[in-house]
Length: 311
Ligand code: SF4
Image 1 (cartoon, rainbow, N blue to C red):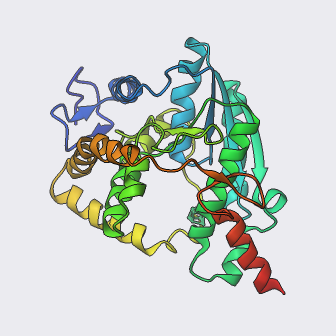
Image 2: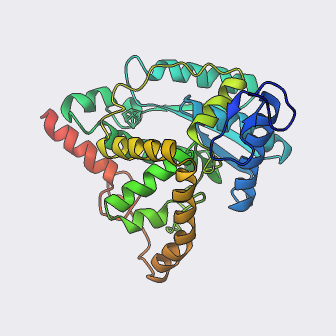
């Protein structure tokens, strides 16, 4: 296979693209240009002086780190990575070590927080109590802790490594669950709730397929061989959405882009509809003071459940 741009040996074949084959150099250029275009398209770094990055140490967040570190330097933005230790034996230790190494290499400050210290439970403990709900607890705890940490660090926005595959899965899952509000809140940049206590999330890889962020990380010299989270298949709905979309993509290349583009064309209208409803401002959780639509936030409610089962 030869590169369509320079005739060198190709390392990537993109079935959905007009230009299909890329050598290392042209793939890297293509990858970075597309992510930077998304950053401009959605105004992701507009007005940002301090940017956070949720760094799990997986291929997507590491690719985002390598993309953002030089860009932030160029734009005089202070980049701070945040890693969360969920307490998953045999898994998280390895990815945290990679996160630390890559931050050191790129001169990016890394802040780590753990579920055990801040919330009181590891995900291994949750798994023992709630056999099939490790991912639900993990997702709520992570969102809570990332937002709190980003606010404490006075960050303007928080970038995540969410790629095209994650986005297409989330869109499909929210449709299957009939959750229009969640769809309206989802997107490349922020959501419909404007509250100073909420740090907007941005997704620079929203137009990047998962396989390509893995290849980019690999070509940047990062080892992407690592253990999979032992609870990765607990989220049955996401697992099903992932398999369905992968199957469609294989038979009809470009399907995931089409799901994303359909979502984006409906998103502004959906977003406007919810904004017009003048949703009441968020309250504060009576237990932890974090923003919440209920008297007690979801994270505190979950902790209460876990403690109840302990007694
Ligand atoms: Fe947490 Fe589930 Fe992801 Fe494992 S797969 S890190 S339990 S959300």
